[in-house]
Length: 314
Image (cartoon, rainbow, N blue to C red):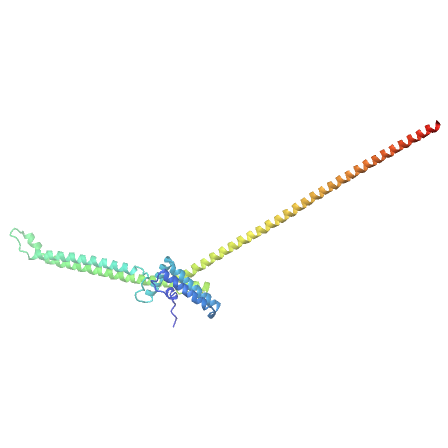
């Protein structure tokens, strides 16, 4: 015997008329209990249970997704031969529309029957009324035909009423077959969707609504992964740009350092050259001073010799 799959309401342990606050409170309690019992499950079982609880919570907390899930759940309960769906679940209005249409046709048939009865009553009154002394022979013949007209009118009314009843029955049978065909097609389509999802993702869903919720969750995760991937690419580009900027700054600093070093060497060479020129100039001046002193000393000696020569001649 197949195990009956739990609905989202049963998973969260709430009724079908539960408020958002009750759903959120039970969700927090279930997740807290599950986390406290994490060691009792395998990692795969724990992740699966947590995903099912999250899926049920997101589905029932969103008004539009909750209405869609309630409609699908109600349709499944009715198709399975269940009684009146629980309060809060929405049924499709096909059966009500068919019933109203059948009642309208029945009322039309009843109105036609009443009109036939009125015509018959009029003919009875005319047939049993005493003829006036002023009546002609033609009028007397017409009144003689009244019973036959009454019978014809009743027969015509009965035919119309029977035709209306046949139309009502045909409409009900046709709509019944149409609804059965639509339900069978919907169930077959739902089974195909569930099987395709199982073959693609390896997860067995209980209904088309659950497949849609799982696909929405998958799309959300894919979008989140794409967002994370874009953020990683952006971070990588920013990192590459920062490294490129650092490299350029390092090269610029090295180039500037080499330029400063070259300027310092040039300044140092210029200073050394200036010192050499100053030393050379100073040496030249010293040599000139030395030559001047030697010349002055030679002149003095020469003068002294001349003075002594003059003294000796005297």
